[in-house]
Image 1 (cartoon, rainbow, N blue to C red):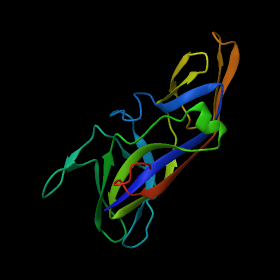
Image 2 (image 1 turned 30 degrees about the horizontal axis):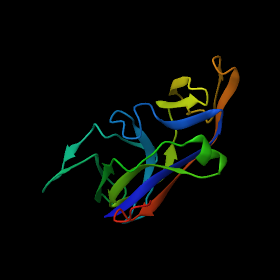
Image 3 (image 1 turned 90 degrees about the horizontal axis):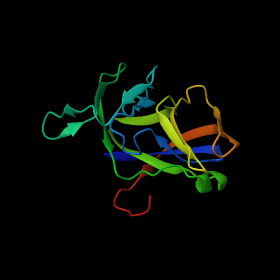
Length: 171
């Protein structure tokens, strides 16, 4: 079993607490990314979608969020989400050029690649105005905060997966 943490970064202008609409552990938020087979190295053509509210029983014990066969070598692999380790991307992290840890994926037989930003995000302005259902499938988001009388923007969104050891306190 290998655990991969999804880290996100973005340039936040007059915004903070950038995260999935229901929070970092939103059961309805869908993560889209490609998978690489650890057996043959084949990468899926399309993004695979995984969410906390979709579970499948495992043959022996427990549940997982995705069971998929490699189209090339036919080996089966699983992806299980591990909530409770993420945090929103704050304005301070963004200004410091740092990433926010979002979600852990326990991957067996696959490695996650190329996270795709889509809809279903939220953020709040520095003045406290909430912006809901932000769609980042086009890459950027721009709006105007009338309460704070300032433009708000999310740009240069980026994501990466890193192998993490869950026994360590600081990821």
